Length: 165
View 1 (spheres, rainbow, N blue to C red):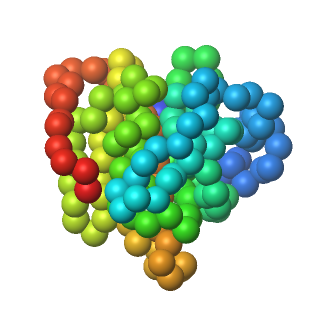
View 2 (tube, helix red, strand yellow; view 1 turned 120 degrees about the vertical axis):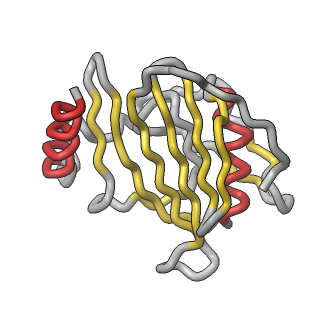
């Protein structure tokens, strides 16, 4: 199973450069039922985007996707991907966005690590989402957002309760 997933990831990585095809974003779907904004750390509003790659993975608006470093594979039985974005939002604003928004999509925060950025781990039945937010090395004052979505067997989910970053 692991070997098959690795082969699928590799194949998707090679094919993900295409702007059309099965991996393209569907801009006609609106998976959000509540388009409100989230009060982020520091008093700024990070607003949820209207279109995402996966309907249960929240994204803030005004992100720029790094097409060369992003790969996504989706079938009826499997969703897997690594999505890389740059943003003008600060690291703390983006981390707080995920702490606030992910539970609205039934994600449970399982771990938080602050080291070279904010590492947030979320789980839901059958899936794991890892969110890495760090200061952008390209854009001064901005951040880099990396979201990894993988299958998960659901063993031993642990809820983490912590203060905002």
